[in-house]
Length: 212
Image (cartoon, rainbow, N blue to C red):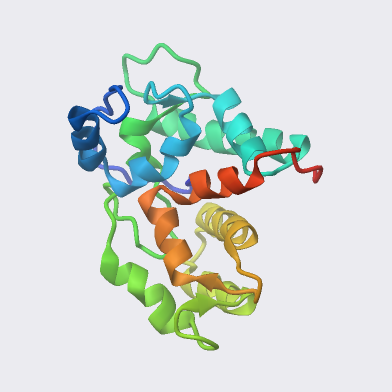
């Protein structure tokens, strides 16, 4: 999930995520109409109403294997940052609730640019993650290479963006690295298309992780 820095959204999107019967042709069309960024965060919308509550973010982190303390802290930071930025004028939910239709307003600086300001996927910027920073193998990042990428992407005095990008990428590396310690390109692509979190949660099913 995107942790907000200095949001750079450009107005409310006209398309609202629609709750439809799973597997129907209409559902497939609705998924196709969603931006990659909307798909990226949809894992946390467990009741599929287009709004991610504090409790849904918390439960999402628990499903990913994080402990109670980390999950509660993450939900506080993420929903606290994005709730206000994504909230429409006629909102009735808590100010800690994230509205997926406006999630592009939480896009922050000091990141890869693989999501543009409207939440669309930018393939050229995605490829640059690896052409510029994958030095050991062409299709994977080591922890050191990831750190180098984060430093290279930092915009001057964009401290919130620095923290947001570091938190997101370090979490992704922790969850997605392979047995050889590489975060592979194919894995990172699933982060952007929205399938990564579901895959991780499926692997984590069973006893909850005990980490804090």
